[in-house]
Image 1: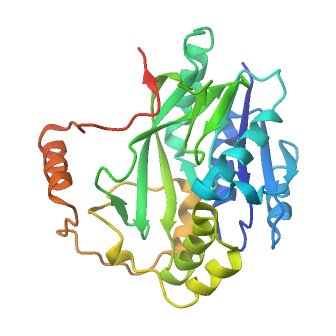
Image 2 (image 1 turned 60 degrees about the vertical axis):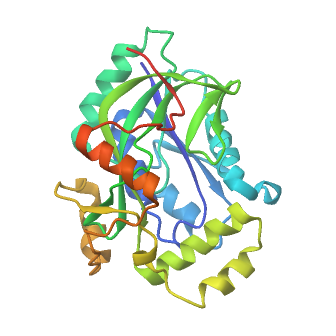
Length: 292
């Protein structure tokens, strides 16, 4: 069995993405890794090249400005990295630049890939998600955050990144996947308010189809208001991946949200309570077909 990881990134230094931690977290189960590095305004390419030169291949790309709206450019860049993976690899492990796999899950992921290698009906592996918000001490605690997504797929180039690169589909159809007893830690919403406003502005430029200069001007006018942006939060009681410890010590800040706050419309408040009482998320969007 051979496994190749893949991801895309641009301006990782400028926006302080934990992309080194992201890639490094899955390297132990990957024989090789492909990174689509978009033309950047910083030293992103040098940063990626320094992680594990013997194991990482870089594909230099230029982001398509016509694919801004809806974040479609993220899927386009993901596909560029996927298409560069040689045919000799069986599984492709996708990790985004703000996601990290805890080291405690590496054996389970390795086993799942081995166990399902000969099962042709299995097109991908499904992971649980934990979304951190504000600081490294809190996680999103509502249906606003997706609970599961595909992060390992067959090396089948008819599989394509879907919409804004959250998941994958094949010929427009959902993939048949098996659940892995593993969790991806998503750190995309953990930054000091000043840095978060800049990052959000850059993302909005691609979702809203506006220029990056216009987005930066808007971002300079204010700091990001975390208090106005969450529906419900819970304190994180577990341990972060070892590879994240230095970053957390360096960047964590004093964020004190009101955990009793439930900022939702009535229908979502009811669904939230049902989920808390019975452990069932009704009407959940699933970008996959789960099989045994």
